[in-house]
Amino acid sequence: MSAIGVIDYGMGNLHSLGKSLERVAEGRRVEISYDPEKLMKCDHIVLPGVGGVRACMNELRRLELNEMVLEVARKKPLLGICLGMQVMLEHSDENGGVAALGLFPGAVVRFPDPVAGSGERLKVPHMGWNRVKQTQNHPIWKGVPDDSWFYFVHSYHASLQNPAQALGTTDYIHPFASAIARDNIVAFQFHPEKSQGVGMTLLSNFVNWTP
Image (tube, rainbow, N blue to C red):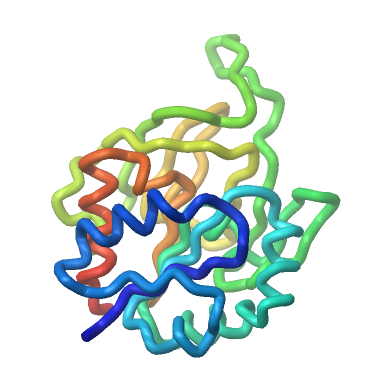
């Protein structure tokens, strides 16, 4: 039986994500593991995470998961969520600057001075519900209305070198790429597992995606 792998490198509560994936897995097993051999046997792989990029990269390297993620990115459907999306870029400005996985050209940068165009002072981190504007058609958006609301918690965001790799944008202080994709990889800055019905639709679309 096919399986969905969730990379467990010790950062973040994976219970909610695991349960959400089980709901859309249609009988497939959900394997939450730090074992590269077990994960490589899965058909779809999810890289989740909350926290800092430096600690994330340190743990991925310590557990020898960084090379596995790069191998997965060459051959299997791969989903990054929140911190898991950020480490897919080349570099993060967080923690004084950290080299990341380099799956997408670009950097992760902190939100600028948190004042909206209206003069309203906005809080950083960006926490709570916000809209995602779909910027291109992709199978991951099937059944998800444009401008749907998703749940965010983050202080840094992706700045892509190639804007065509943005699947969706969100406006907070300024517009930023909140969903990105290339080839067999998709990633979200928001948490689909915390985003109710539209989030479950996204997860279902991912586990049934055959790029």
